[in-house]
Amino acid sequence: ISGHDRRQRDAEGRERDEIGRDALHATLGVALATVMPAYQVAQSWFQGLLVHRETTRPITEAVALYFIVASTLLWLGTERADAFGATGVAWAVGSFVVAGIVQTGWLWLRSRQGRPAAAAAEALTARTPG
Image (cartoon, rainbow, N blue to C red; front, side, top):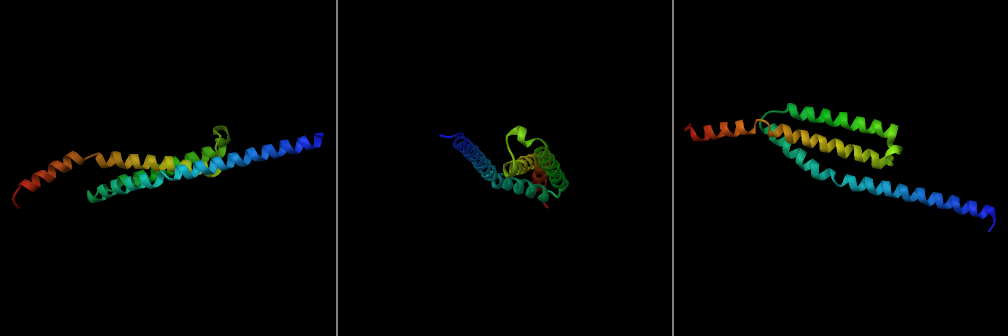
């Protein structure tokens, strides 16, 4: 085997490694994206609770929080994604998933605030003949 043939195989081997890494990142992106529908159901539920109580400010807060988290993670990805071993679609989708989970957590937290008082008020009005 000549030196030239070895260099070609090394170059081909490196190319195969890069293709394998890209496939892994794409698979990771798709896997992360499968989480989105689950937390979006929860988001809709918590938003519905807040709208029913006519308390919509927490929804605006949650959207702002999503924007801040997603923007920060996307910026971090452009600056340091290689250090974390993720690039491109996988990093972007991961950023959106993390931001969505943070948004859902905020909605859950804010939808639980005031529930005991609201339940007590509903119980009092239900007992009072009207």
